[in-house]
Length: 428
Image 1 (spheres, rainbow, N blue to C red):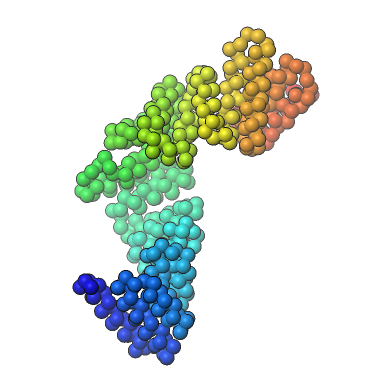
Image 2: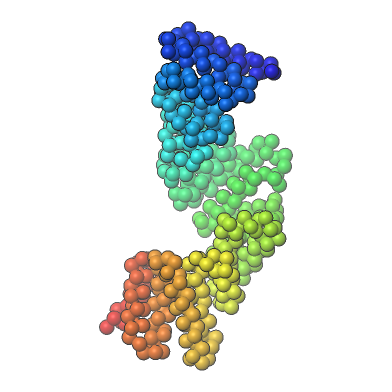
């Protein structure tokens, strides 16, 4: 047994001796089992330690140290529900135990039970108002719960405890970004980078510095959402200089140029992103699972549509549907694509065939998502075009219903006044 382990055991035994001297009969018996469990745990015989602790709590159910140590052992072995149950009992029995509330929060956080984690962390913060990790963990859990004001309260408290931790500035930036206060988000992301870059240890291997890249990407997105395209582009270029294989950086550069209505350049960047994913089979597989690939493909298809390049848009959308047959957005854009493609034909029958394909695509989009206002709008347009060719009043009625449904879902959509006017005219 190492000297450090021997020292730990001696400390525990000294504490246990104090407990024994103060305990009553049942508590004394429980404390004896508890002491045995400490020794067994330090020897790595955790199963026997758990058995001793269970015997201890049977002897005295109110013996909180035994519940607490059970929580420790279960947490270390990954038995999180059992750990949470033990810490809950320990904390209930000892309302002043920072250790039990803090560990209870950690366990619930790993279990993604963020409401329970936040509740435990809040109690831990009250017991130790200057504990950095308790406050930043509370803020993070509230952020996951989308309780942004509470997240800001505890995030600011963590920042007051230690203002030189980039993790805090990054989290505060994330909270403000979620609140759509992009200027504040930008300020905190920039502070996070300044703190990060001032840490000499963070400079040792910049290309592999995932934390810095994460902050930079968040900063670029905040600039993009704030419609500050030039600094967004500058940050993304810096990211690519550090990580030339960052598909996400190329995707966001595409978003920058799409927002600037430079669709040809956006297309180039979206294709670069897809080429990077295709070059790495492992990355491509992960991106397919997470939906990153289809997100980029959708952006590429939209850029093609806005550039008036309908044939390549149609090809990309068909690929998306092959990957994700339930992708309603792809069907909605495909419907739009067919409506635009009809103008490439001279014969009315050929035009009508494209309109019918648009109707079929929009119907599929609505079937997948009944609340897709754009699909209802497009379906109304396509039905009305078909009605004008076939002179079928039933098509006119369905077109009007889809237009009305689109306006009901999104009353403030672009050209909504024009659409209301069309409903009024064709309803006469």
